[in-house]
Amino acid sequence: MRYLTEHLAAHGIANPAGEARFLVLDLLGLESFDLVGAGAAPIGPHGAARLADALHRRLGGEPVARIVGAWEFWGLPFRLSPETLVPRPDTETLVDAALRLRPDRSAPLRILDLGTGSGCILTALLHEYARAFGVGLDRSPGALRTARANAALNGVGTRAAFLAGDWCDPLAGPPFDLVVSNPPYIATPVIAGLAREVREHDPMPALDGGADGLVAYRRILDALPARLATGGAALLEIGFDQAAALDDLAGRRGFDRRTVVRDLAGHDRVMILTQEIL
Ligand code: GLN
Image (cartoon, rainbow, N blue to C red; front, side):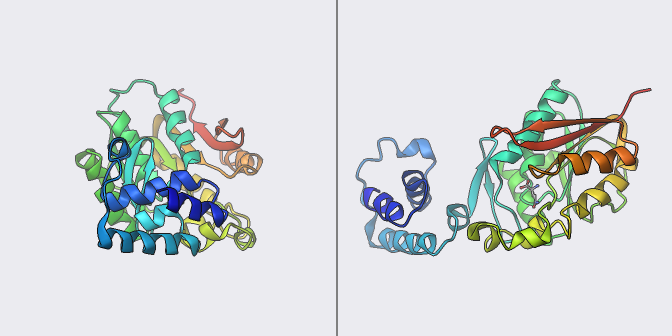
């Protein structure tokens, strides 16, 4: 582990000890707490070869999450596939905002997650709301397979349905109490300037928000009134500099109650749109 840490550090990796830990844990098939007391257990020649391969990939710029093929979100494990974004800690702000908005954990909420990807947002919410039911929509069949596996892995598979569809495809069934989404919101011209680890390893359809970064929001907002139940709320993740633009778009579409929530770094991160209960 020390060798791995030093090697990663020497190549300028920002969190070498943490990343070394992830790679070793994956190799040993362990959860983080198992490592305590694992001591100097030998990993054998096969393990050494796998670790060397992982190190090679890491130093080639591949994120640890991609090498391991899984990542943690909201304290829960999520499998990844090439079609899914690596879940970001910033997105936990959205889950947290939903829980503050609807504090009753036993409410039988109906939740819709647009562009569900790995299914991380919906799975985390279903994990917290024990009687909720959710639909995850995505255009990518690969993402839908991954999301289904993740819901099952975290014990909420029987309360989730994952469907192929676009932002605004009509859905059968009653409208939703919560509509959540972390849509692609990076403006196309900005993508070239993203960190290589993101640009080369996260799926482009999960990042690219069109010429001004707002294409997905316009479509989501247009379809939203028909999807929200009376008294329902939409929680949309936004880029740190998009609050004013989205506020304007939502205002012009008649959403008269709009709240911005900041992430732990103090950046605008989530826009909450609620409907007046008349
Ligand atoms: N909902 C998924 C996530 O938050 C996917 C988001 C995306 O691909 N833009 O990770």
